[in-house]
Image (cartoon, rainbow, N blue to C red; front, side):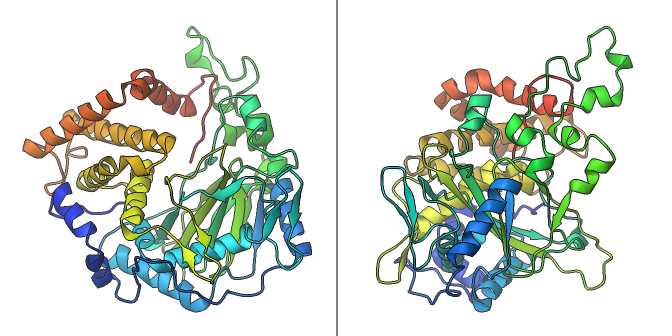
Length: 455
């Protein structure tokens, strides 16, 4: 998902990005308010308790559940879909910038109502549901996580969704077990909302259900000696021996196992919830399909506050009692967009000027990011800059920076200084983990013992 670099440096970008009126001009049909969202009528009366319990059962047993009832009204959905389309197709900006606008937070509020609102915790571990209307999830310590992303997948441009992955990969079996509550509910759940029809023709989600995935609860570390090859006979190892330890290969170990893969097409407005452990991916659509249109979607994450704390310090998504919802102000929304673009930089193929602008804004507002999230954001920036420097040093035409990208001259020196500064400021985090991270990337494809498959 490549986004052309505008002919400007990171400082110029931040000047424009920090001006709310700039975004109002780009998407005049969307709004940006500094106060709480105006009260909106709900998309409906919500599912009854029996339906919610069935959906939770599916989530626990299968790792996902399909929600056919629209997540919001058509007007809100259409505004968001149009905003994302304008950002991507007219302004060459990532879809996630739609989070700057109130309408994205209005949808977040609807998502919150569906999953969590009106659940009541007794405080002693005995969760109770409201007899009037309850969310799908048992409350426990679940909260809106602020891990939010938006997508615009256009098969006509060769785009595809994310490759197969798990959203979270606990390091040990004890940590994996602890990522679920005793009742089986996951401590990290994503709500993925289709803003346009999502089909196999234009890209939809695919999953391997829990019961067909040995690594879902069993972990992705292979059995002892599985898939290992000694140095002496590595050249003679079969392809199966080299790949059997990959989580996807283990789940798809026979011809018949491919029949377990499930496509999850969604009509516009419908949604799906899934856990951090389910293997899932977005397909590559058919650019030659009749009347094919982009797949547009947005996702929200809910997590246990001890398993993964909300990304923003001092911010919450909550109703004020009068029907209005408190959501982050514009400056914090921009911070979240910049941080998310750095976290997922490999997925969106962003120009260096955009990465640098995102880094500068996150650096200036670092105290507003949760410590663990902040470290990951800056770690990913260092990784992104190192990859670009290594690529440009190779000197091939394919790896040379674009003429209007940050590369060469003083701009490149500034990026090197920023990279060194970040490594020094975070020496504890980077000292040993940088090589480990590179090793982990190699191990995904090779025959080592430790396996990671992350989102």
